[in-house]
Image (tube, rainbow, N blue to C red; front, side, top):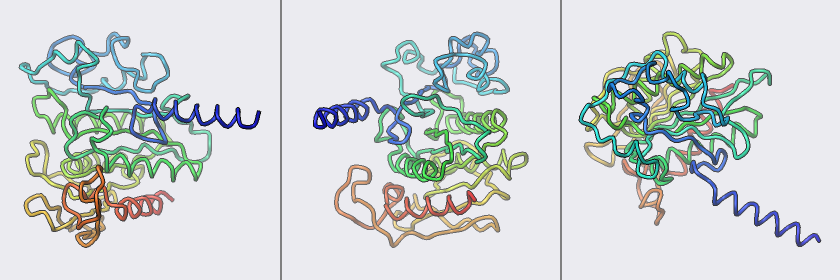
Length: 320
C-alpha cells in the first residue's frame, strides 16, 4: 500500500509538471494575451470601448470568470495600433504569439489578500527579445529569476502575482511604446485593486528600458509601493520607445557587463541607483540552453547563477 501511494504521488507530480504552462515552477498555470487582439471593436485603438463585453477578454486572474476585474486592464488605456498589422493570429488561438502572461498556481486564481498582515508583491519580469511567452525559452533568464523570487517570497509567507512580458506590443503603432503603456497601466490596475500590494520590476536588455519607463511614470504616485527596479544589461539598441525616462526616486539595481561591445549595459549615475559591473562572472556559454561556463556577455548575463542569487538577495533586502 505504501508503495502504491508513493507511485501515485510520483505520477501526480509528473502530470502536474507536464501541465506547466507558464515556465514558472512556483506558478505553473497562466493566462496569455497577444495584446493587440484585445481590440474587440476593430477601431485600431486599445481602450475602454474594447471592454464593453468582458466575455471577449482574457480571464487575466484565472478565476474562470470574465468580468469587471478583467475589463479593468482596458479602462483608462489608449494605445494606438497599426492598421496594417496582421490580425490572422487573433482568429486562431493556436497561431498567436502572446507577449504577456499572468501566472498563477494550479488550483487558485492570480489574486492576493490584504488580510494576511504581509504585503503581497506583484513581480513583473520583462525579457529582452521575447517572441512568444508561451515558449519557456523566451525570457528564460528573467523567468528563472522571477521563479526564484516567487520561491523566496513563498518561504516568507508573502503572496505574489507574477507577470512575464516582452518589451514589444505586437501590432502597436510603436511596438516598444505600446508595451510601455500596457505594463505601466497593468501595474497601476493591480496597485489600485490591492491597496496593500507592492510591485517589483525586473528587465533584461530592451526589457530593462520598458521596466524603467513604467517605474518612472508610476513613481510620482506609487514610489513607496515599488520595491525596486532591477535592470540587467539595459540596452536601448533598436528600442523605439522612450529611452530617456528612468526612475529618480525608486531604488534601481543596475547590473551590467562590458564584454559585448554595442550591446553593453552601463552605469546609471543617479543617487537612487546601485551599480554592479558583473563583467567578471560566468554563465552557461549557451545561456538558457546550458553548456560550459564562460565569461558573461549580453545574451547570457541574465542566465548567470551569480546574478540570480544576488538579485534575489537584493530584492529581499529591499522588501523589508
